[in-house]
Image (tube, rainbow over all chains, first blue to last red; front, side):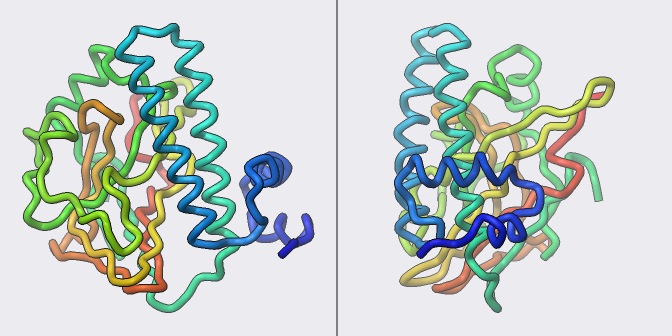
Length: 103
Length: 141
């Protein structure tokens, strides 16, 4: 399923569209929500998290660790993009956590 | 649904100040815990927490990656780039707490998902989102 950029743009409001679109394509993901696509993203992010933790334990340079983190950032953005493409449904739960000490 | 405020663990507060946490470089995750969990202000490492949501129904052990962001100058706001979302499939995802922690490290903060306090539950086919308020997770001014 392909969704026009304009439609995606309307859905995103605030997320950099070109970046998000590029991420999905680079990952070989369809520009549409599926549980499998999200699971793929989460699995890759978990792998990178393991790599990042190992780099930190090894006292790797910050730039090296930051490069891994940036890959995770892109995956997290891609996941958010996919969720934006999933229509909200009755029964979805949103728990809004207030800031530290806030009400 | 009104979740509670994010609460630092004692170790999380110290970890911020002694440089153990590097918020814009380290990898963080958010995980869901049950009402029977030992999560609290005295919690230290993620590994020491008990009663995480079972790895089932669309939930993976350890939760999912999130990326803290820093914004501002005289007041720096720590936020998450996107909110963590779980899709329940094959059964419900039910939890009492959300926990924000560094992978292979310490817990930074946690919150009740419902201040009653009560469990929240997303049934199969629905999503559970832990949404950060517009003001972020915390600020330093």
